[in-house]
Image (cartoon, rainbow, N blue to C red; front, side):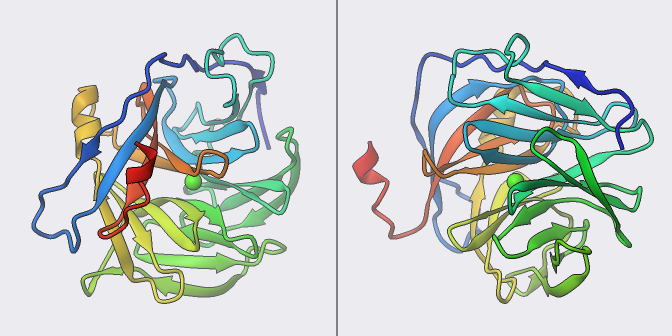
Amino acid sequence: MYSSPTSTSSILRTLTFIFSFWALPLQAETQKQEQWEVLQEQSFEPSIFTQGLFVDGDFLLVSSGGFGHSFISKIPLNNSTETANNSPHSTRKYLPKSQFAEGFSLHEGHYYLLTWKAGLAYKLDKNFEHLTSYKLAYEGWGLTSNGQQLIASDGSATLRFLNEHDFSTQRSIKVKHKQQALNKINELEWAQGYIWANVWHDDHIYKINPQDGRVEGKWDLSCLRHKLKLNTPEAVLNGIAWDETRQAFWITGKLWPQRYLIRFKEHGDSSLQALN
Ligand SMILES: [Ca+2]
């Protein structure tokens, strides 16, 4: 599947300071006053057009989109002072130039990757070696796993629960926020029994009930994008990876030079107070 494997690259320089603050969205549409906390901030390679993001052990896995330069990369996460550019433990592999990398996930000990419009998905081993190809009858956007099934988005409000053996759809849900379809769902992450999602060109993180598709939480992260002062409108929030060890989410965006370890708090949840 790959045309020109390349190794090592991408910056992973950790800022030495750890900061923490609260952001309290003021938007009237927020059902509850949702809060979130940045536990840690690290630099990230700004050329990565982040599509899929997840943690596998001590590594952060990312897929980067774009025709002609899509790739997947595995970046050490535990050594926060190491840069991926010079790390012997960091790997990168390019897709054929006609394929645009999209959703990327760990499932049952293997990696799965969606392409945007090529009608293809892949099963890979942990060294990025190709194992199986699948046909997709829809656009590939986000991908995650609940442990039993892969879950894919296609740019609409629909999420498909897939059989990993043949990528057939076992069931699907339509995501709704306040009775309205939530379209353009992009990156996905399964954590704490919920589906967490980005929406294309949207500064919020959404928490979705996997049974009925109802949005049960929504957090405004627009201040992160504004703070970065990125000079392209395509540098949007995208990338959610649950870190089981740190009990928090790595969050980034397309072409973002930073990634953030964030813990989300819901109204009435006092669990974060004890961490400060
Ligand atoms: Ca993810």
